Amino acid sequence: MNNLRLEVENEIAVLTITRPGALNALNSETLEELNTALSEIEARNDVKVVILTGGPDKKDNPYKSFVAGADIAEMVKFTAAEARAFGMRAAEPFFKLMNMRQVTIAAVNGFALGGGCEIAMACDIRIAADNATFAQPETGLGIIPGFGGTQRLARLVGMGRAKELIFTCDNIDANEAYRIGLVNKVVAKEDLMETAKAMAKKIISKGSYAVSIAKAAINNGYDMDIKNAVEMEANLFGITCSTHDKQEGMSAFLERRAADLTDF
Ligand code: CO8
Image (cartoon, rainbow, N blue to C red):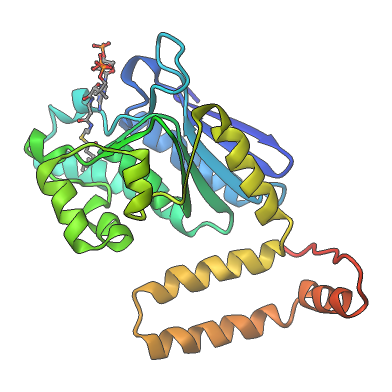
């Protein structure tokens, strides 16, 4: 892979986008590499959590940029049809981040602009370094957020705030992103990866199959009416009750011992 690094340790995959000359902007090649890497990870039983982050810039500053957007140098030449194809090329890996059985955490280490904010929003959880900057600058470029931003931002922070951010292109800092619910946590930039890994470790200590089913229940129910959503949840609850982990988890509680949860 030219623009992506994958490291796996202790059931955690760290995926680092590495385009130092373009502040990790997403071009077609990077989106394809990301799609391939996520398909491979999804098939692996030795990965329970994926942490997505950005590599250093060309001056080797690791906190300059998470992802500074989609690649403007590539997009400037697009016809309408090519732009649509580019959007769909991103939709595939973004849906994988959202729906894959592994938990996905964006560790936002600097600029998260346009497509950078959008890829972070496709992850389950966002942890921001205290120097991170978020924005949807697209309308200033004469386009709209096209990697799901008009949809995911409104779902995360509400329609009013999403409209303000998209219509004004304002930059917001990590604390404001936390205040409006765009990120789950803000930490000192030096602590970013350790915090993301500590959260991953905590998630991995729970029943991994149950976590993946809970993720599916939250995602699938979000756009359903409440009656059907609760019925869907009851069905998934029933499935978790047929697992080894349910038997082991509950028996361990009753026997006052640590549970050995192994399903995934
Ligand atoms: N695309 C391509 N190259 C980029 C991008 C980008 N998004 N961002 C930065 N770069 C490049 C710069 O061109 C520069 O290259 P070079 O050194 O060869 O001149 C290098 O990265 C370093 O950038 P700067 O010199 O500009 O660094 P600064 O510290 O001065 O500024 C900024 C950093 C503020 C992040 C600035 O680079 C910037 O404003 N970047 C663009 C941010 C932006 O507008 N992002 C949104 C892009 S649009 C988008 O993401 C749409 C998503 C949906 C597409 C849907 C299609 C269907």
